[in-house]
Amino acid sequence: MAVGAEVASFALSDRRQLSLPRPNGLAAGTMPDQIALGRGPKDPAGAITRMQTCLTPSGHAGLSASTLVGQSEGQEQGGSSALYRRLLRLAGILPAPHECLAVQLAGVTPGETPLLPAWQDVKRVLVAP
Image 1 (cartoon, rainbow, N blue to C red):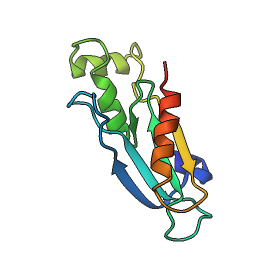
Image 2 (spheres, rainbow, N blue to C red):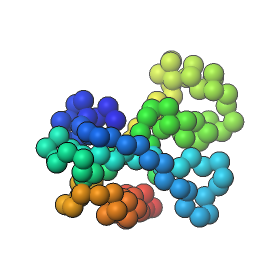
Image 3 (cartoon, rainbow, N blue to C red):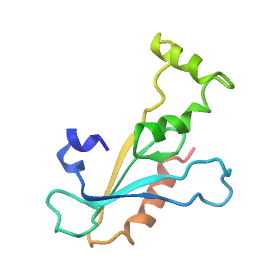
Image 4 (cartoon, one colour):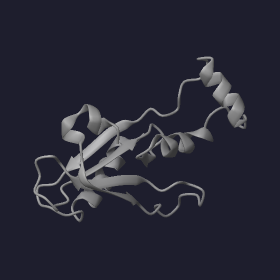
C-alpha cells in the first residue's frame, strides 16, 4: 500500500499478498478481499506480525487502486459506459471511486493465524449498517 511511504509504521517488510476466499452467499462475480501480511520496521526478521488492507465504503478490501476502482466501477451510474464515467471524472462531475480506509492490525505473537480471524471481526464491525 502507498500509505507506507507516508506513514512509517505502515511500511511492511517481507510483504506477502493474500486473497481471502469469498464468504458463502456472495455472488460468484464478487472479488475476494485482498490483504497484505508482513512485519513492521521494528519487528523481528521473518516474523509475520501485521496485516494491512484498504477498506472501501462498500465493504470490499483491496490493496491496489486497480482492485479498489474495479470493484466500485459497476456500482456507479447504473449501466453507464466506462468511457462516459472517465469523462465525468475528468470533468470533475463524478468523484474518483477509490476512497478507502487504511487498516492495519498488529499481532502480539508472530504468525498469520491470529491476524486472519481478528480481521474478520474488525471488518464486520467496520461495515455494519
